[in-house]
Image 1 (cartoon, rainbow, N blue to C red):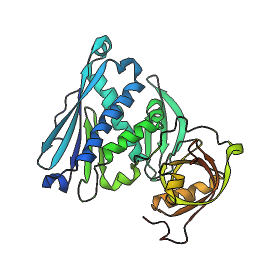
Image 2 (cartoon, rainbow, N blue to C red):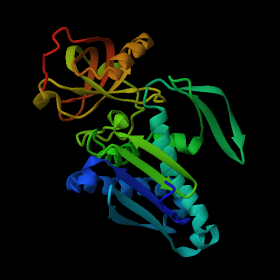
Image 3 (tube, helix red, strand yellow):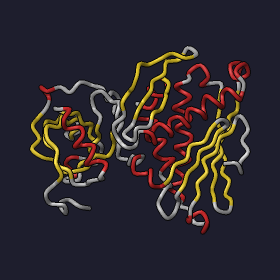
Amino acid sequence: MSDIELRDNEAVFKYTGLAVNEGYLEAARFGKAMLGMDGVFDEISRSHQSQHEAVKSKLLVKVLPGSIEFWLALAAVGVVADSIGLRELGKQFFGEIGKQLALRLFMKNGEVKKVDAPYIKNGKLFYALKNNDGKTLIVNHETLELYKKRGIDRYLSEIIAPLEKGNIDNLVYSYNTGTVAITSADKPYFEMPEEAVEYLDVEEVFEEAKAEKIDALCGQFVTYKALASKYPFYFQVREKQNVYGKRFILCTLADEELRPKCLDLMKLRERNILISGFGIKNTSGQYARIKITSVEKSPDNTLFEC
């Protein structure tokens, strides 16, 4: 991003690809992306409560030959902002957006494990994480906790939404101390359809007494939360959606030995997966949580195809 000069209170999302070169842009996608940029900023603001009222953001759009850029600028107000300074606030807010994007790219291939013991540096708690590619990432506790929240997932996914192979192939996010690059090939790991339901407590214990037996449901795994302690998988049913709904269903595993098989099917992007187990319904009569006892690829590959 050497062609862009950023001030301390600025960050930019730059999209490039054939669609931009030809001058045709899908307004709906970029409209959601702009809402996502505002939303992720608000989520991070809430995580920095002491500075939340001290900082306001402004979003500007710049269309250039070969690219479209969305500039996010900070405006500091109040005593707290004056005492901290724009440079430090920019590092906190824009840096956190960069960390969240980088963390999702790091975790995109599935299983992530904490390695070594956590340690404290400059008064902050840090963890070392290792992914399936053998890469290691050092992340602080606050960033990791924010990553686990569902709200920021949705906003980041809206930012990624314009990426489409052959049209919008690249997104580069730059801020005053770093850069994160994402390509259209990474997009499947960021997709979060509008039907995704917001659960207030995704760590709620699975209550066996409320569950009923499920013989088989056909659908696909859409999200994997490597660090979730109770519901690591999100499943979307593909059959009888008028009955089961289109929203994601939180899934726990009856046996940890099922995890590698679920991950393999998800990485292969299998859309016709059969799961069995026990389900708990919500007040609308649709499954909200499932404990999976068995999982397999549907023997009929054309069954329930859209």
